[in-house]
Image 1 (spheres, rainbow, N blue to C red):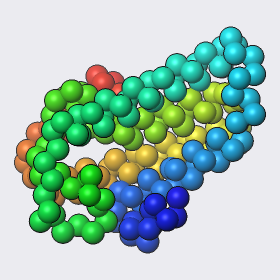
Image 2: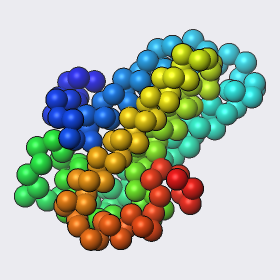
Image 3: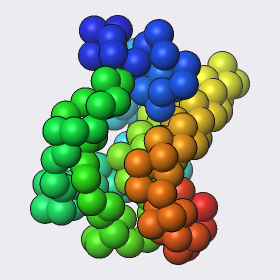
Length: 169
């Protein structure tokens, strides 16, 4: 994760800085719960976990598809903390982006809680809450970057959409 996050790990003003710590929490959850993945497959916590994991997969697929369809790269974007796929020149407001601003982070949020519910305990509850807080901060920092780049258009977009869950949050 350090290698993947090398552009942002030492830049607390970047959304990638907080995303790195969320990923670390998710890895911790996965390392702690991997042995419970298929234990008691029809228990309530397993059913909740699988439901959240399916939603996670949907969110990431919907987000990637819309990014590929609507993205136009801007090679003039000078923010070195951004990866190439993040350097878009037009705001995407269709598909899943019509309802939420952060389907990729939403996917990670559902992934976090899906893994937690595989075998919930107090330690992993704390890690899951931390991961969620890091994701919320990631989204907040990303929005600051988008407001800087897209301006009033992004501000209006924020008023029409939710962070992670359509119509709710």
